[in-house]
Image (cartoon, rainbow, N blue to C red; front, top):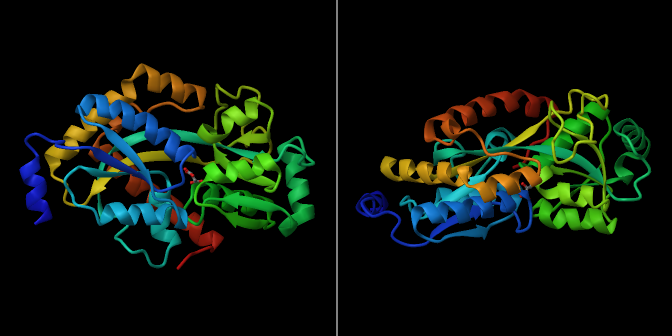
Length: 312
Ligand code: MLT
């Protein structure tokens, strides 16, 4: 019956407000990207696009909500690289992590930064590595749960250093960043969309960006490779999804609205301030998104299996 309902709605889609679920807390990097995209997509669709935060369990609770939603294009998911890592990280998920969704298009790829509280006793990545080796689990490392980008980045860091820290999970790095600012959390790896302004204000330390190239909005921050840990590299991609069974015409309409949003001057300028850029227009399509996502599941599988950290 849901599919029939969706089919009926196609002609004048969207017929009412569209909701985009962000599977992390408000104020964080996924939320920031989604709010900019939602506002601009709403202009193209001629309907309000609202954002709802369903955080918890590394993004899997929000994904589950959308997998179970009516496939009529009025409930969408904006999720990140966690869609490629959760199928390997979780032994059991309350939804089909691959076949439970239709892809609409890729959105952006965001560099990450290793940041620390202001009085952390290191000024370079090499010095931070020494502190991590010395202090180990006496250090608090924040993440947004298993499946979060901050979790994946932490895995890569701890594997490269060979020392584990105490992990403190949050519903998103929006709240976690506040704890780095207050000094209760020592270290965190988070997307530039959430850290750039704090770094440039001098309210937290930064040791590196996790991409092959430096980031324009953080020109003085070295890459992992420049800072001596070339294997500490990850880029956080975001994509827009609809529940399985959403009609192809609606997927195409949404992809067109996404492309329009990614050309929006205000969005492009704000993305640049936050260290990121929209994907090329031909990547904001259902096919390009699905291919990239499938390849990324295969890419991370052996890395996660080697790290050996799974969730039930
Ligand atoms: C968020 O929006 O809170 C993040 O994307 C969390 C993360 O994946 O690290």
